[in-house]
Each structure stands twice: as C-alpha cells, then as structure tokens.
Image 1 (cartoon, helix red, strand yellow):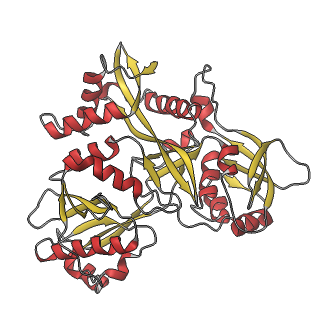
Image 2 (tube, rainbow, N blue to C red):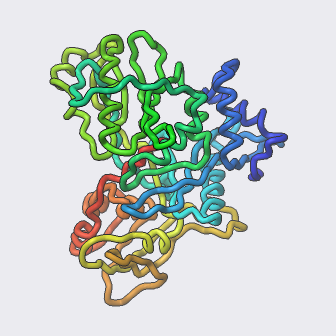
Image 3 (cartoon, rainbow, N blue to C red):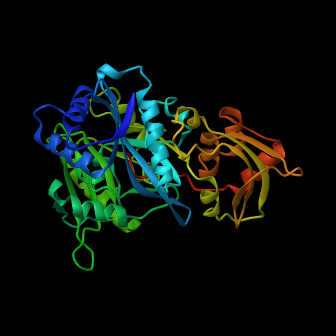
Length: 412
C-alpha cells in the first residue's frame, strides 16, 4: 500500500468511482456529483493506492469541540471510503490512522467520526459517544405554546448563510463545528428534495434559525429534519411551531432530540400515538443509538482546558493507545500511550510519569476519552469498557466529572 495526499489532478475520477461503488452518490445525479466535488475540494484527503490507482480515500477537516466553556481544536473524519477491489486489506484502518496522525501534528486535540458500526474504529483508539434520540413524530400531535410567523424558504443556494448560522447556533458541552463549507453545502445537495424553512432575524438580515428537511415524498412525508440551527430556545420553539404547522398534510417528521430538550414534553399523548401508528408507514417512535465516536489526540492540552468544580482528584493514569501499531515508523505522532500523573479539578493537567503515593487508573484512550467527556459514569465504564481502578478512585472521579451529556449536534 502506498499512502499519499489526494491529488485533484489525478485522483478525482478514482475517488468518485469509489463513492459510486459504495452507494454514497448516484451516477447521473448532477446535484450529488456537484456535492461530491465540493466535498473533495473543501476537505483534506489521503488516498491509498493499489496498482497505481486510489482505492481508499479518507477525508478530514478542522473544527472545534466545546468542552464546558472552552473550545478545543477538533479534527472531523468526514469520510472513509474503500472500493470494492480493496476490501479486507486493512487500508481503511491504516489510512484513517495516518489521517489522525496528520491532524494531531497540525494541532488537533480531539478527533471524531460517525461509525457504520461499533468496534471498527475502537481499534484506532476511538470511544463511543452518548446516545442520540431520533424521534419520528406526527406534527399534528405537537403541542407548541407559541405561534410561528410565516417562515422564509431556504434552499441549497443559501448554503453560505446556513453554514454561518450553524456556527452561531446555541451550543452546549460536546457540541462540534466543522470549518469546511461542504459540511453544509454538500449535505444540502445530497438531500432528496432538500428544502429549509427559517427566519432572517439578524441585525443585518442574517439567517438566525432554520430547519433543513429532505423527503422522498413531499406530499405526505415522512420528512427528515436533518439539522436545526437556532441561537436561543425561543427560536427553537418557533421552529417547532413551524414543524407543527405542517401537520395538516405531513404525517411524520423525523428529527434528532436537541440538547437541553425532551421532545416528549411537546407531543400530545405520545404513547397512544405510538400504539395507533405501529407498523404503519407513519409509525411514531423514538429510537436511540450512539453512532459518534471520539478520541483524545493531545492529553496534556485537553486536560489543561478542563475546568471542573469541586475538590481536585489526583491519580496515576496508565494509558494504552492501539493506534501506534497502525502508524508508519516515519510518523512523528505516535498516539498518547504512556504513564501520566493526572489532576482533575478547577485546574487540571497531565504530566508524564508515576507518583508512588497515588492510586492507578488503567485505561485505553477510547475509554478515558469517554470518561473525560462524561459519556458514562466511571463505575459503568469500568464494568463495560477498558478502564479499571480502585473503587474509591472511581467514586472520586464520579464526583468531579458531573458533566452534561456531550451532544455533538453535528453529524459527520
């Protein structure tokens, strides 16, 4: 395998062929093809060659992750695509490892991605994020205590305004942004019958809040509300009122439950509606899955940005990182495995070494990332993930790591 940067002059056709082979874009669909071209232009790409042709492609892009009140440099792994002729060769895993290493050298403190299934990216040090709740609801059964003004239409040609609004949106712990315009533009172009509804309430007429839909059946739905952007919860409620207004014709809307919100609060008789619609084309339901994964790329820097309330907890951390075995010897970044003296508290940090008087926490980088983000309490991670330590230490970590659910609020 030869790994190298993507070359737009020689590799585009090969990468486009890969995306067509795996069903991510359709041949002859001009919008999807243009979306792919924008995507490849905006993201940094690596390819792996077989017989002189690119047969595996990995794309990454810079962004941010919010940890409580601090912004951390994020590298988003936006695509891992392997052709039919390159399967079971280990190309995707090794190429993704190389992409993570490149991003870490460039300053990324955290790396994240969306997974096709759990397990594959754990071998690169990623740990599973929190559950995302996706509601399929009948908008006619929404009970929103506000009235919506007539919204404006938002189209894929408004991608710049949409992208800016996503960056200005109300954000919480764990929320992510991506710099690449294609993170919005390409996704809008790939949406079937994509359209948006929103409001230009900025001081200079900027788009402030909107919801982006797609659907194969525009007459009755279901509509997929792929993302929303809003600067405050009053704007969120107005968008929910817009969705409710569609209920005279649209029978189902699928949407992700936002951070801070329990959508069931806004649904009239949710369980009755679930029973009545069961097994129909418009079945109301709530499904959960944890499909985003993250890993720390710079432990001292991440912990230096960690400001927690309460008495500090000091301990030894014995950290393993499987990514090292997937990197070429020439890679200057080798992962974050090693022994550290860690403090978590109002001023947190990590220094290489071990202190004789401190308890030891043993963890993989994926499990420690989950602990640090607050995905699950430490005793639960000790039971189900690669993390172990004395009960008293786990109890102290549970006390100090009282964090909101780390919702990324941006799929990639």
